[in-house]
Every structure is written in C-alpha cells, then in structure tokens.
Image 1 (cartoon, helix red, strand yellow):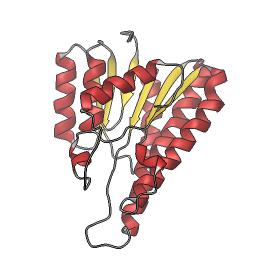
Image 2 (cartoon, rainbow, N blue to C red):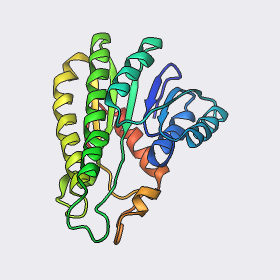
Image 3 (tube, rainbow, N blue to C red):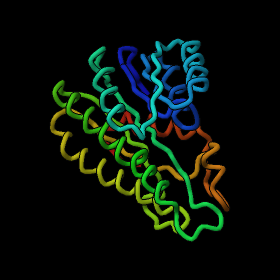
Image 4 (cartoon, rainbow, N blue to C red):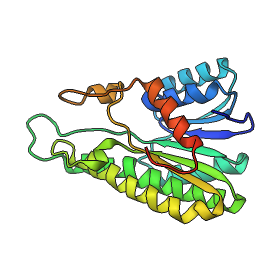
Length: 225
C-alpha cells in the first residue's frame, strides 16, 4: 500500500485492540498520526511504539460517548493541519449480562452513542471539511453483527447496522466531491473485547491481520468489506 508521508491520519480507539493495531500499521509508513483513546497509559504506550517506528504522533484523550467533545476535537485537529484519512474505530461491544432477559437500558444508550452517534457525527464533520478541499478518506469500522439479529447483543448489533447504513449513504453523497468513504464489517478479532464474546469465534483474525486488510480497503476508492 502506498501511503504518503504527508498524510495526516486520525485513528480513534487507538489505546488498544484494533485501533492500536491500525496505529502500528500506519506508523510503519512514516505518517503523521492523530491517536485518540480513552485510556491515557495505554494510549501513550501505543504512541511511543509509533514514534519509535518513525511516525509523528499527537494524542488526544477522549471518550466518544461525549459526542460534542468529539465533534469539537475534529474541528480543532483539522484546523491545525488537514486530516487526509480518518479511521473511526468505535468498538464498544458490551453484551447482555448473564441472567438478564433484556439488555440494560443505559447500556443500550451508551452503545448507540459510542458505536453509531459519535462516529456518524464525526464522519459527517470530516466529510464536510474534506469535500471543501476536494479530497480525503474516511473509514468507519463496523461489525459483521450489523447483518444479524443477536438476542444477547441487540444494542450492539443495532448500533453497527445503523452505522453501516449511514456510511453507505454518506459515501454516495460525498463521492462526487472527491471524498472516499469506506465501511468495514469484520467478524471476530482476537482482542479482549472479542474474547468476552460467549461461544465459538470462527474465522477469528489477529488485530494486525485485520488492520492490514482495513488499510487495503481504505486504499480502494470507497468500498465495503
């Protein structure tokens, strides 16, 4: 994959799991990275790895459940220097607690905020900025759960289904303005959140393998995976 050293790449969820794997992948291409995450120590550890690999790194501690703060941060970081590619990794995957018949209402609300509302709003903000410049790329990380009704994870599956539909519609809207929108819907990934899922995890990917596949998809002219 050809990644220019002039690219400024935003990666959310970079303090662990898939987001951290994406940060490491792009760091090897000597990019300027904006890494957002919720856990200060883990985020700084990932940033240190990326700097050691040759990347320029700026970090931001942020919880995507604060949508207003996320939108403001997009504007602030883009004003400093244009974001050329954004990989929006929002992977809150809480499932129904053992013994519960229905998911907790507060849990469903948080899943909707983190997995759908925040990344969709951020993508809209980024798309407007990129369309004004005539170029840019946005990758929204969904889940294969978007295609299934999961009784033990109704809120998660619904939030990812909403994100998928939003991404597909956004792609159609901004493609004429030079902005590529990609949505990826991976299955099981070997992360702490993924391992919390009950039962078998067929076709599970390692985070580094998933990151490489997502990067290839991002390099394509707006596609789904």
